[in-house]
Length: 556
Image (tube, rainbow, N blue to C red; front, side):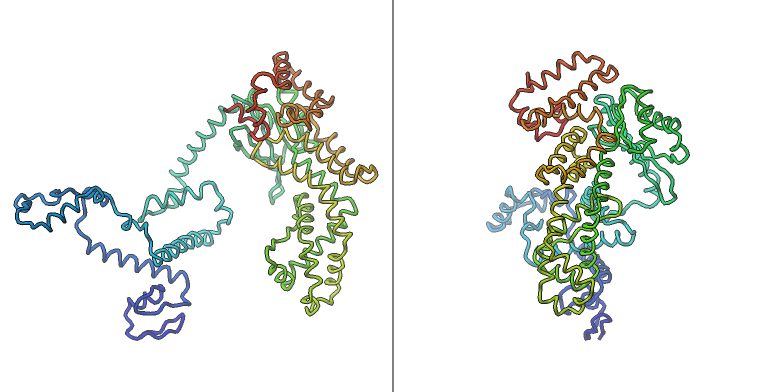
């Protein structure tokens, strides 16, 4: 007799095998334990599985040397001629032998492979699937691996490779991971890098400098190279000692340009700080064919930051934040809202990204009806905290229609800028050719929101124009916009393509002999492109101009 330490069940006739069956929750001549920890259950299940496999191996028939899937012909397994005679065999024996030599006998049956699973087998397979998931999860938890590591491009291929190699595989050791496997991975990466370098020579590339500060307040810069083939990391530099000296700082960028090859570099993108602007000018003096532009995402974030600083928007964001804090700091409110069918969490503003303020306002506005239902429910009246000042203030805000109207207006103002920010932050397609049109769209949307009343839209338009004209606007933006078939062949934007500002920017770029040595040929070809002559007038080209990523047409 034994007493289970987990569920206190008393089992008579306690053999060790029955104890294992009980704790592994396998049905048999003893009931399963309902309180056994998952790790104990898993270890005992593995122990029993090994026991059964060993037992079956001892009782297994002699192994076929040709493999389990190859069925022998008659006589292959009986090479003794004295035993091969069929004279004494009766009709039933002969028919039985003939049945075995049919064409289907040389292939494994579906039932042997488990294609027709019973309900019990299907449930067991789901259980084993869950056990594998749990084993992977334990590794993540024990090694403190971030959960988003499961989104890695290499995560599923790793699982597939382990599954293909089968039972008995042992993972690489610590020594192997830090020596020969690391060296092989480095060689693979170098081969990939070499293919990227070939694309730099074919179609040019952009050097991107991402500046940031670590916890020791060191000014670090990550240098990356972008081309249609992909983005590759070059090096990371501690620029703390040189960031204040424009000449020394420019030498650092010149070193990166030489590593990539100055003939391959078309464009350099940096932050919008004054020292980076100086580097852009000095680089252009040294390499006239290289253009510099500030980071569009940085400039757009600064626009959103300026809009968020407008007093009435700052007040609105503060009131919205008080609602979110009230909801998520109290168990009752959060529980009440999460019981609503189809409920999604309210997004909260971040500390560093200015766009999150406006994204949070939109998320809060989407939950308007749920929040109003909560503050007018009978449950709130009987709740002990409903009489506090904070609860009353939040209820007043939620029931204030003017507050919700203001939220909607601010969301409409910021939405085109947030949309453009997502485009330039995305790696799905080149974004340079969408910046000019995106700014025009944002200005138009703001004016439409205020029905073209100048005194209402002017504060916001002034912010956009100030940042655009003094920081963001470059000739390359206009040229990229003009060369984008999505806008050149669209009736709504073709007039913008022919506007003086766009044409001036485009002509300035192609007139630069360092960028376009044969600018006469460039003008002829641009005319063919604009007038849709030759292959540009093809119906396939016209229909695919809006759905095909730029650069893909060249690859076809």
